[in-house]
Image (cartoon, rainbow, N blue to C red; front, side):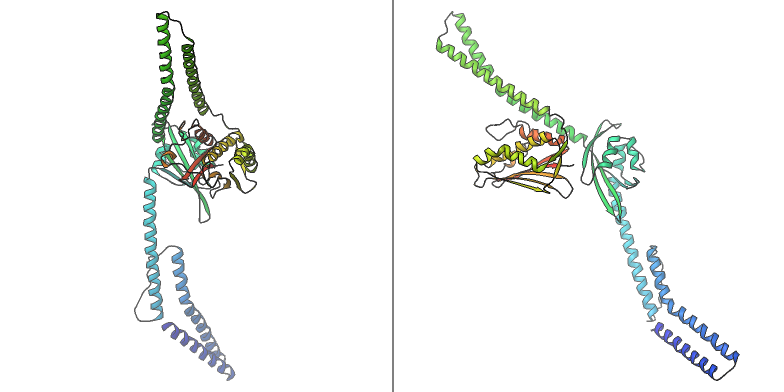
Length: 447
């Protein structure tokens, strides 16, 4: 109550002084007394203003301390129950809480900074002006530098890496080879664009995947050798056996100077014909392998998705009508444009749609849906969904392996070719399948 009592007392004293001054003027007390009372009134007004502003000044100083992160000041507390005392208690409580929050934020910052610096994946953050904010130990080790102050310095290390970091947008990734004292490194570059307090900056992750790639490469070679060995042996074994049988019988005839009967000649011709067919099969297999290994570089141009889907529908119209398959096209936006090699993308869609047609052959509901849209990260997505029987889980992980197939007829290179084509377009192909419900292939174009 001290503030209110003091304020009311000063107002009352000022009112009394003003009354006395008015009375002195009316009663002609003289110039000296009137001047004295006038000075007294002026001083009382100044003192009243200063007194009334005292609490506001305390609040202003308190807020200034908060703005400047000065939480160490303590306001005196007398515990006399006055309003000023209560105000000081509240000030001290707020400052203590802010000081505690500041200490917690600083501890969290130091913790995350420490984690950031010691991650095995290289991480770099930089602003719009290229100034490096944080670079961790792993990034320095990958780039083989002691310090990094501006992202432009990476151009001197590897121009391709510098270009990728500047051009990639959120969610974009690229594989870059860089020279390192320990040998050539294959770096996976991933970029995220962030906005904090109105300032844009990029978070770049650098991961050395050389050992993983070498392991996968060796595994791929082993799988390829297994497939080639299996296929070639399957063709050569009967050819060798049959050729040996024919040779043995003919040598026996020559040795015993026996004539070859028409029936035996027919058997020999059948055997030679069989050898020819298996040889042709082996040649066809090798030809398929060569086509998988020599996909031409894509010739990029603008592709209208609506037109591409329409051409595909016309191409497969006979099969669709013959098997009574419902064919649905969904494009959003309708004028969606894709940048790629039209011939190669068309081949991928033909392969996947042909697979879908075969998948719905025995289904009650025969439906194939082609979708095209832009996802939340700005990537163009093409989907081919069917209502077929689905793909078994065991086969799902192998369907992109060259020459692997679950069909009685087929070379097993269609999906492998499709994956290769998507990789040439810096995209990807994914599949999800549920037994008894259907399969969806997703073509992802990073743009």
